[in-house]
Length: 110
Image (cartoon, rainbow, N blue to C red; front, side, top):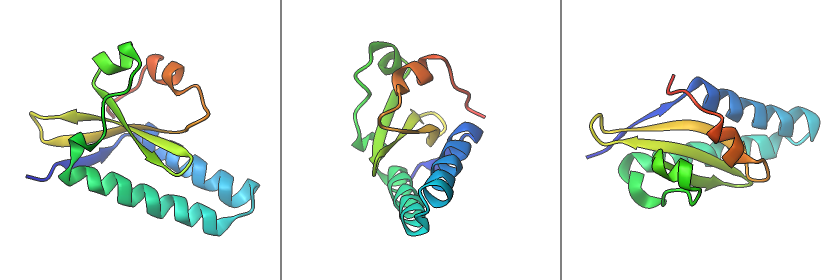
């Protein structure tokens, strides 16, 4: 059974911000498009195989059930809801950011 995919407002904003940065600051619109295409592919694949990626190693985030999938130089963080058969993408952050601190600060499922 396939799971529904839901992007939170924060994850959607993160993805837009990353693509805008690559397009307008780095002046590489093709790389921005490639990032969006790869993100769409990786995230859609979670519908069929949500358990494909392990829980993160950080103990607090692990206890919250947070997993990640790599997307080029970025990481899509998500939580699986077995009851709702839904994958919720909570954030989309660059791999060099202090993502553990950002996620520990909190996130919303909206």
